Image 1: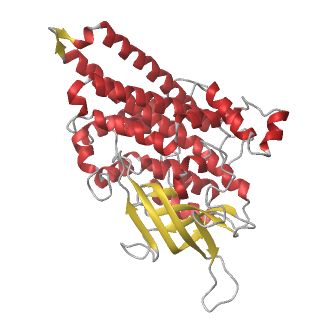
Image 2 (image 1 turned 60 degrees about the horizontal axis):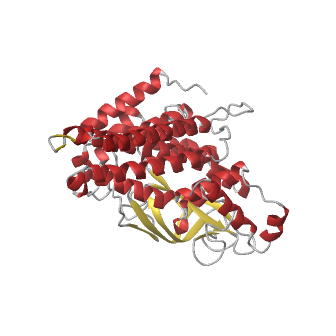
Image 3 (image 1 turned 90 degrees about the vertical axis):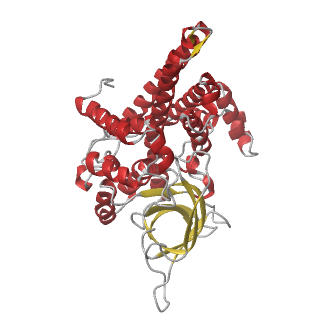
Length: 448
């Protein structure tokens, strides 16, 4: 691993930081989250047109910039520093990689250029609020997390052609999904649903054009923005009642390919989200250091007191460790495929658990830095006018959405084989004991 960034990577960071410094201060963030979409659409289109932000990690063959997960992570670090409300994570880190990995050539050629230029925004809709499980960050994603063929979740069935007869390639979706990132505004939905009924159920991904049929969307689709603690990360509840959909990819693709693509997307999304959390924590720490240098108590700045200095020094060391972990996760996710090849959708296999561990460390760091920022700012840190609450809310809600931290670490330990099941545990697994004991030992070993 080469730890030094290239000049191009430094330029991405500098350009984005300068633009967001001018256009995305705390007052602009608070104003943007109160708009119907929950973000500044004009700023988003400027970021897409000027910097190609949503297409940063997409191949040039599909209208992207041709960079990789490292450049996307650097961009997310800067958007996190400004606590930018935008559809970047939902579009560039969740939906686009899945379309690139699983989509047919027609779907790639039609959708990815529009996503890369910001013409379309997209998101991943997972039923039951189980996004972290679907991405294999907190548990294996080869189970019944999308509904299991029973009531609940999202079910898919092939629609018969007009006039009756056998089913065709058209699909209909029925069910609900909550906590969908930018789900109320995304023009393209990548929906995880179960097919085959109870006996032969398996999870597949489907495309729903939410912008079809006019402003209200296609018949049967209801989207409602949910109230969230962190307004800079807008979420929505989706209700689908016989909504027309298109299967993502080919009909003969096996379930292992879908779960593998979701897991690979999860590793790369975890690296981007870890970098974003590091950016938020860095901004919170910088603002706190600036405040303690100016705030006087007993005739001297409070930053001159040794107790305050020690607390800030500990936070700085923790932050640098989290930054290193996020950068390593991004590098691991962007390695060249070991077998070579020219397929633009081909990726190397990230190291097991690296993304989840980096995300766990970044979320824990952000939580600690945000809490200290509120406390060291004193009474002003609890006010709406100050920016400290933006950092605190981001720390709390990201862990609710993708954690908790101890589950991220437990899953990483399982993937790395740190706590293999012995013969007794294998025997207990039939009674539902083995997996629980392994997870418990992983949690204890991770210091949860």
